[in-house]
Image (cartoon, rainbow, N blue to C red; front, top):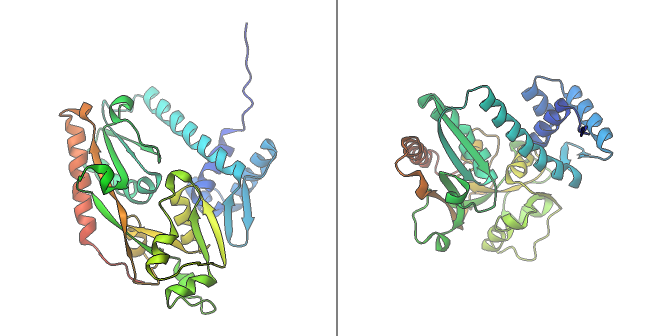
Length: 311
């Protein structure tokens, strides 16, 4: 008889790692998991010892994923999502009426997911499944109902976008108030750490668009931090670890809540936008039509609020 013993870390260590990697904070991960910061830290240390390598780079007031950490984070997110889906099916709590949506990680975590509770309360019995990836998905082949795609207008055949996009530097209120490194004009960015995307699939999220528009060429900042996911980059900005190139509308909520501020009122219009694409296979599925209508209404309401970010 064949036997196989899985050589895996305990599930609670993986849960702690996923929360800490997503939040880039042991404290926030502890709050989410109802653990103390020190308990999360001990679990991460145990996981690192089990795997034989560091998963996080611990800096002063900063927590970053190492290369090993980034690799594990992608795998753990996928596996935990599959386990969650399978568990819900076995419990019989997955409704027959489903809406499957694909979009970018940034749009999912920063704009869509924070609003989903409102939709689910208004539409009980609907199972919304979100697939977050920078890869372009074939909706019909992969059984996806809706896509919210981040693309140039030329690639979308003149289709009207859900949102057009502006980009503007954003940072934590504490960093904006740092008297030793004031942010009075764009050239003052030279004294700060800039947060960058380090992913060839997301190479369009580039500081050069904004810097060149303000006459800053051959620009060199005081330092740089790179991230493979935009939502992690934004969390680093919230934590005061540097200045991000903020993409509106994704960050309007964080700006309204003063988790981020825009020290300059000089936004630049991006060549990209967010486009809603519906799969032909959905036909007249009522739940998909209802989700699409809700999404358009949320878009409309969002555009009516605080059109200009306040620093």
